[in-house]
Image 1 (cartoon, rainbow, N blue to C red):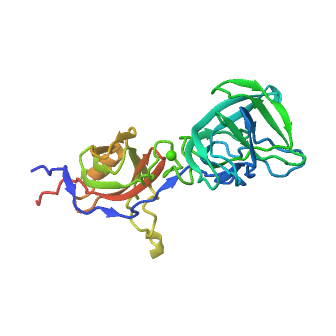
Image 2: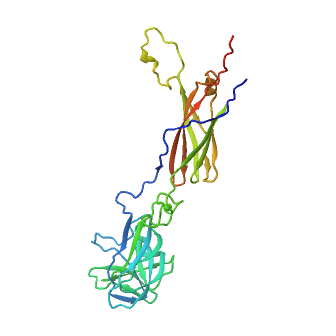
Amino acid sequence: MRKRLGFSITTVLVVLVLGAQSSWAGPFPGEAISDEAGWGCTADGSRVGWTLLASPQAGWPYSPLVKQSRGVITNWNVRVGPGLAPLAQQLGVFRAVNGGAEYTKVAEGAVETFSEGTEAFATRIPVQAGDFVGLHGPLETFVCGGQEGATSAMFEGGIALGETKAFKSESEVRSPVSAVVQLDADGDGNGDASQDGCPESAHFQTACPFVALDIGDVTVKRRAILIAVGVNTTMSVEAAGEVCWWWPRRPKAGDAKSSTKRSRCQQARVGLRTPSAQTIGAKAPATLRVPLPLTVQRRLERLAPRGGLWARIDVRGTNLVPYTGTHELMVKLPGRAQPQKPR
Ligand SMILES: [Ca+2]
């Protein structure tokens, strides 16, 4: 009777359960994950119709510009001194063009009303390093006056989103607007420190899903090893490994006993690999087919069923973050030699 070759392996040795690695590098050296743009001075007056930018000052080591690329303004504030009436104010983000002679309004926040002691307002505005924050009030714009030696870029009037205007230089004033800017490493428009649960990947804003592989039945067929795989989140899975053996030889006279302790890969090392990676989801487990090369099949045909070879196979999953997890299997390949009939 011919021995059935297809059967389930009941013993699967899990050598290494899982390792997750990410290619995300995080902030560049010296780049803060969260920083502030604007001077943060306290408003002591207001001007009708002004748009006033938080401009850098020559000779000042501090820069009021946005320092992060890619960054996101996560909240903004106007510090208002005592005795001033509450005023509606709007944050604008400006980019210098034409060598700094003009500014384009590239983004704006919602109109918010500020009075003494007002809390910061949350927002979500993507920005770049070098952007200016500015302030405009539909009626009047808060300013910090009496700023000795300061000059700030000012435009008389409101500016629509996308408009470019020539500003003039206004002496001894600064804008009281300030904005918290967080790094946005993956560029998904969410600040890494407080708005993005997965700063490693633009695909996720909630916590990054780690790679979990669930290895099911491992079945050895005549021409292939079948590995059932389930996953926790959409990922690309593949399997690769090897089968090794040595050829038996008769010991020669004078062989040291230790000479028989040869590496099992000394004579033959045959690679195994799924033909291509397969993308699967959490609700759709798959079966990976790892073909057995002819050399392995022929070798197994010469080995008794109790003998056989071991295949070491890494099942590797890479999700969208991307994180990679590896699950190492040792799969017993029984010998396929026909038992010899007694004479
Ligand atoms: Ca993200």
